[in-house]
Image: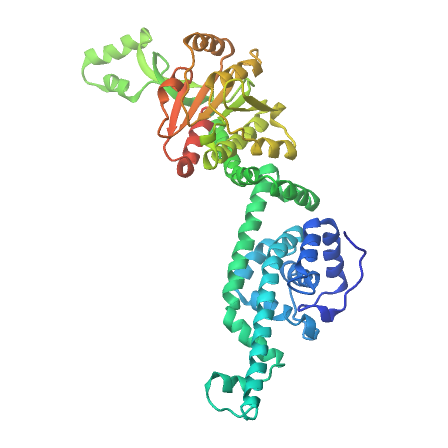
Length: 482
């Protein structure tokens, strides 16, 4: 549907569009089917939608935009829209995201063009209706023996004195009636929100700043048909940053992270309270300190090395029952992308296990935490919408894990309750001891949710009372333990 470049006369535009900016836009237009479809469908609202696209792209892309005062009469409706738009603060806010950025300017321009086409049709309809009303008033005045232009009082008389072909006056009337400023402000805010949402979704897939414009367009198109994935990935950057920040905190603490109290004789770890006896004037208490020192019975901090030496797997099991649809699955999957980021940093394998009823389980495997954007979109979009069977999910985890690699972490997220047989729990506990695996449970609060069953197989269980408002807190706690 693309076409060869042919320079368009300047009088087709509301802003100055030289040869270079026209060539830039034409190159983008030829690659983006959405722009071509918009032009094809937009002709029923305005005769020249492609020229409007060019104007909006230029206004958003160019650092300095100059008004074109020699626009053709049949293109004149572009002028008030472009002029009024550039006066608004909302336009300046949007332009911070699009200035000298081709893909972003084209994407925001596409959103703005859709609204501008509606506005221009409404303006033209109002102008046509006003013109017809003036003509009718003049005809009525003539019919009643009144000469046009001489006011006889009343609305009809006032209209009869106006020119039905005065396009400037008709446009001014239409703009005031429609409140053009308000309409443009709303559309600019929405365009900014959509662009930010898309940028966040692309950031969820990889490094947005280094992503080529062709890849941005490719993945944006894929996400347009994957509403859940788009929402998941738009929230994923926050989870990825959280995963990375908690990892830095853990590494910074390194070899001196306190996790328990023990007895011993390491004076560098002894609790301050023990030194009270040593500093006492009472000889018996001082001797008690030395006795406990010799017998290695002083209370001291137990420290652990928080830098991972082993490279077990990360598995995240997400309940795909019908009640998990909507916000719960979106929150769970965005958290999963954060876990995937940690896996990539640590060069660990990641398994995204989605489960529903008995025997119903699907999973994605990303070795060393690496995956293509297409694979990540597929994982983020997947939702089975079935029942709930814990044993199916847990068995799949046992089948997937390489037991020769200790320090495996399984994160189990559900909003439901399901019975797991005692024999299975016994085998699971033996398996966990064999491979050094830990299971972290996150129970999304619901009227039927019960932590009792999860405590049978999870090492830690947290109940998420407000999954939408507090997911960051729950995620941070889990990140600090994996």
